[in-house]
Amino acid sequence: MLARYPCPYPSEEHPHHVQLSRRAGWRKPENTVVVARPSKWGNPFPLSEYGRDHAIAAFRAMLEDPSTRAALEYPEPEEIREELAGKNLACWCPLDQPCHADVLLEAANGGANED
Image (cartoon, rainbow, N blue to C red; front, side, top):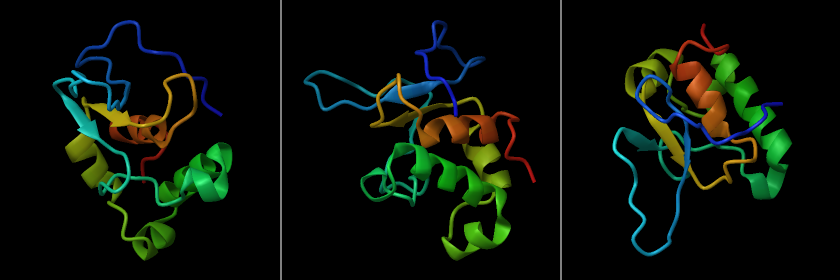
């Protein structure tokens, strides 16, 4: 499981997880892509049904399995790298909790999910 800590040096060289907010005045930072549901980057395994740890484990397994990825019509690793590399990824998950955005950050920036 990934430990979550807010990135102390947000920059293009260090893409990180951004927490979405409905708070008045909040704006999505530049160089940030929303990966929450219902975007194409959303986790197809809802936390409400799977629980946080299982949903993230299922998401990671899905990224690593071409047949499951295809069945769920989730983007391929090449598309993940092309569109998300170097970007901050925004989701509703708290910054101190594991999130599928962490898995996408790894996949997009040369992490463990390469084919």
